[in-house]
Amino acid sequence: MTGLRWGILATGGIAAAFASDLRTAGLDLVAVGSRSQESADAFAARFDIAHAHPSYAALVADPDVDIIYVSTPHPMHHDTARLALEAGKHVLVEKPFTLNRREAEELQNLAAERGVFAMEAMWTRYLPHMV
Image (cartoon, rainbow, N blue to C red; front, side, top):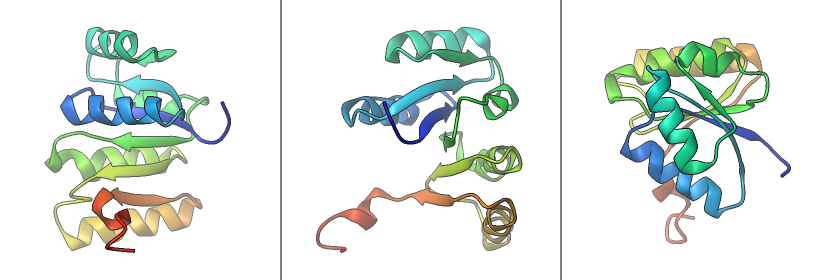
């Protein structure tokens, strides 16, 4: 495959839906990170993912990953997206992007400082009637 190499941060239901979409689109899903090795291994086996990491820090440190999809619970979006941005990864954060404006601005400023892209995963923005 070519293009960005995706990593998924967290292994819940929305992460599974996103992983399925990446596979359907033929995109390069190379890694997953979870709070436990068992959860990462099960998710990796389900979606044929090469790298299963036992922590979010290990995922964002993976040199084979270019972009991280953040699918943690809402209160964790800021901290986990920040972790990925600080590692120099692009991030796509499941909605809501953060819990407040201050957090959102902090992430946008950090992304600009690091020269990476950060965006909320608001798919409805790309529907034909919105365009």
